[in-house]
Image (cartoon, helix red, strand yellow):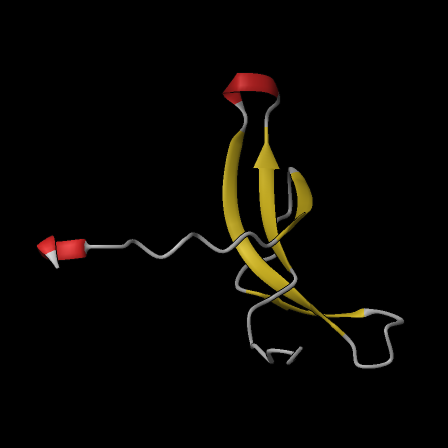
Length: 70
């Protein structure tokens, strides 16, 4: 079985302010595992001064089939 190499991040970083249904999630960056498996490289578009930073596993969206009637 072949291994696919991708530049997709392993995790997406979000700034979360508030809690429950009223929480506001804003995407602020991404994280990729280091080759040695002992850490992550993190790229942030923003660094919040308030709120929490949540790191969630990246889940690519499925590609749409039959877009445009084809």
